[in-house]
Length: 279
Picture 1 (cartoon, rainbow, N blue to C red):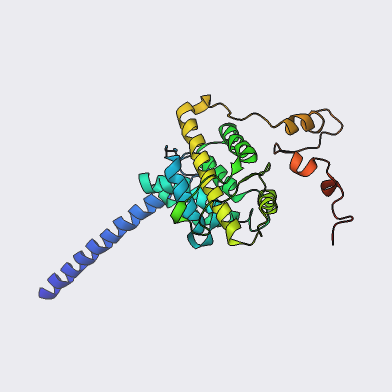
Picture 2: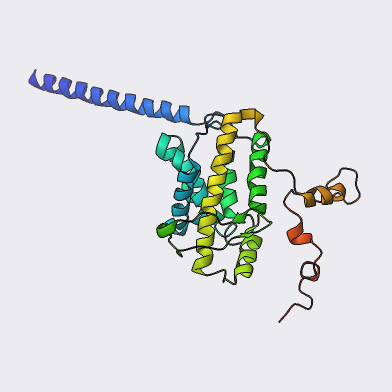
């Protein structure tokens, strides 16, 4: 009888444990099923399902500057963390669940290719977390046009500078491309592109872009679908677009709305390219 009782108790214990495991496994399965989208291309929460939160541009600028230097992750990481990372610090999930380090690839205009300024790429990505292109494009255009025509950097970290302390000269890049933005600044100020001073310039510029991006995001949150553009289309884009971006024109082969003049202003350096280049 004792053996039967022991066997019975062990059996009941095993059933209880097994039942507990079954329940636990069932819950995990249900959670996994709930978290997984039902069909291809569907995502949890729906398209652009995250809701943006208003932030303090000055506070975010400081964090973006610090993030620029963090492990050398640089501009795109700095701006994206300065926006979405700050939402995570203040509001928790889902913002703090993002794998922020993925934006390290924007360093140097995407893996040192000198294409889009990484700071701008990080900001545009942050906008894209919350808004589809019909609402986002105006925000991106405002940020990019501001960048093209503003003398940068403006931000000064003071004694908290991590590269070079003191004032850093600014310039108007006229372009959103890393290659042009950095090269024009280095040429104007006789600074090597590989120098600490150039890194400091880009760190401060990262803070500036983050601050402006947060300003735009806050305005969008307030205005919603009534958000109006802050900057008009560039004159060069209007003029060139009459032929190169007009349907039915023989030369309708232009793509893009970035400032045309940095690459197409007619100077010999831009038309002659490698011929007769100084040796």
